[in-house]
Length: 306
Image 1: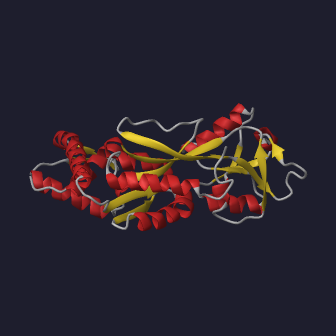
Image 2: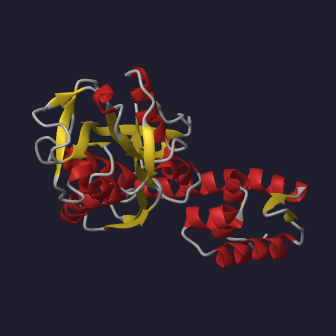
Image 3: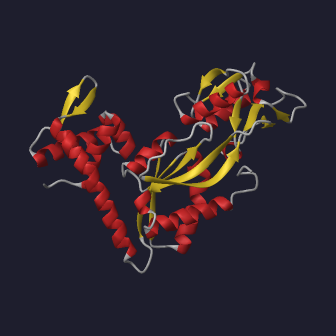
């Protein structure tokens, strides 16, 4: 069959996400580009692979059968690339990395500088994405590895096909409008129970982690503004409309005039690097993971929690 890896990957992602738009967002294509990939695959196979189901699409029996084998083909292809890499005397090749806002701003730049110094043959291509999507992106082969977040209160489900390596931990503090809690340096989450909160959707791992911590402290946060963007959250706290939890790396994204209070509760997040388990011995992947870990060790004091 005259098909390409990109066409097979589009079909596999469609089994996970259900819509052309969602596949396009996951793979960094336009919806039209994904439709063209599927159309080309149908032409190559001579069979109808999709059918419309309202606003969504679903696989035909032929599409489901091909998708199952497509995942195996893509996995075998990736293993072949990694085996070839191991035969080289030097570390070189192209890596695709997925990352979220904090990682893009604070972790990746020094890592890229270092990888150029120690392994000039390695080229890194990065793609910004929703932090909750990075695990699926790695599992589906959309990226080779990714920087992600894990929360002890709401851990990310572990896929046996993925390896998750912790880079460092961050403790959360409480961000409040300047002067909102005069004379306080250390507080409990419950001390902010009567304030309005600025939080991501409870559908996100971050939102669920904060909600879990607040309920454990004995109150239900009054969410007045549902915001995902960290810089926007800090701006809203600064303007006096609510409170939120923050880490040192989050605070570095936007200088803000607000008060940051230590929390009595131990609430933290783990910044991790995720890659496919069989890629652990891939020289380029191993090299970039090592550089990311070393770069994390060099973050300014206070960036990582105890």
